[in-house]
Length: 268
Image 1 (cartoon, rainbow, N blue to C red):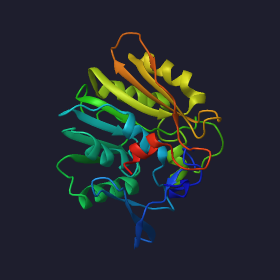
Image 2 (cartoon, rainbow, N blue to C red):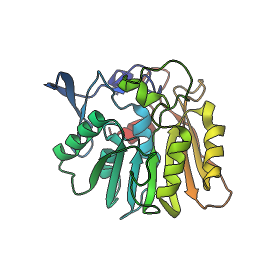
Image 3 (tube, helix red, strand yellow):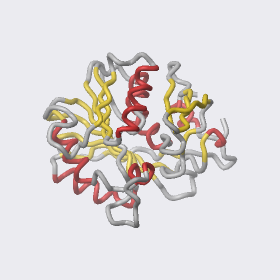
Image 4 (cartoon, rainbow, N blue to C red):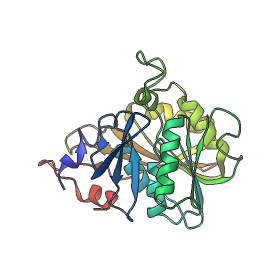
């Protein structure tokens, strides 16, 4: 499988948007497409003019640990890619996806319905900064999050730009997402995030502020000789101090082909 399967640099969270086999159709002046996830016959609705999932979400779905019967919430779910993938990769009993943008949440709901997963996946359109919007306190075993990477104030952002809202801390800051993660998790519950390495120290500081102890860490490199441009982190609510740094994940070989581990995560 060549890197042409993904638009741009597949390990770049900003550039890596899917280029799956798709069907195009129009709805309310927006051009939507149906992408084949090539796993368990799953499909997903996306709008390339708004936002399409990237490799970061797929890698997070392969990194998180979810045990049989556990309840999961995915914050900043976007088009619902992580709940969909977790429905195929895990035996979670319930999976919630929280999304603040109504158009994105609607698209995610329709993807869930299209795949016949209404009994396992629930998409909630809500603002995680509002008390209780994402669910009851200490009700979840696992929380995943692929949050906006760009810090508030880092450049001019058009609040009407859907892609900008997904990448910049306009409607949700790092602290907002960490605080809600801690509120949702049971004691001993796990959270898995994908984030930018240059903000890792800030992420750890926020985790510890809300009693989430980092336990697993994996850096993601586009090529073996390139710096990491993503990091995957797992933390445990109320956990003791011990961090395992796992072997790094390298996305591409020199010839541009995916490394075997990437093929496994994508399910090819």
